[in-house]
Image (tube, rainbow, N blue to C red; front, side):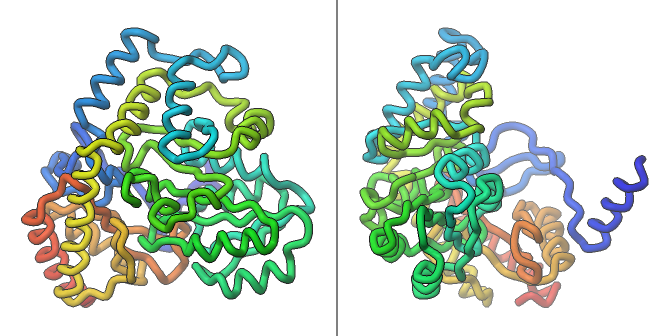
Length: 390
């Protein structure tokens, strides 16, 4: 092995941050086979359990039979397939926006959208706990990055008063992926209006889940019309893959011409587009309502059960429930011990979260049962006591 690479791996290992993958056999469901053992899956973003839903599978298979397995090239080279257009119309309608544009992933969306909107001489105001792909997009743009304390609109207002000269963008997660709290979108929208900024929300973990019809954090807080760019993903609650920007028709035209991750990537294949389209349609039906209600019930039950078991968990109502432990080593001991007892909950360490805030990140699914969740809490409490965490 190259000595430089070996040294780098040793440094990562010494810091307790070396990562490896675990093999999952079969479908993404509430229970999976992990490294050959049956476990309750408590760390998937498959919030509504749609990743193995028959309607999505049937739509995907039918699309392959009709359209084949690939789009062939980028949409600006070999054209837009009708499924791209149908999905974008469905997303725009779902999000109550004029238009939408599909990207190949959440990371591709954020690293394409942000540099298309701002550049050198512009300013981006960014929550300190925003997803890494947002930071990557800002770095690629060349715009000035001004971070504000997490969900602190008072400090953001002060920073905007000082720095918001010329073109500026406020960007935030809708639901913060490692903490499970929701951005103060009403206050952010007011600051957007006051300073003439653009407002972008990455609602990867809210789309399909929050709001009366699952439209996300903007619907929940009643500010959908105030948000210039609603970015979301198909690979979490919607059970498929890819991402989108729900925007004005004018902004869509700009993204088509300026977003490099859209321009220079082979577009998503028919099977993925069809599954995403089926998911967007499904979440707006009574079945979608039922799944959201079950997810909400599971979330409340799990949060309350952990609190009763003696754990201190951050305030929130979303389906992401962290137990902040601090030490990376202790976090991974906790995760590994739970896995050995039949519960897969991933330990999250830097750089995904700030140093000293390593945690177990539990994510609830509509397809979990209260009985399984109650059993998991008993094991979490037992392991936590052994490790001195609770």
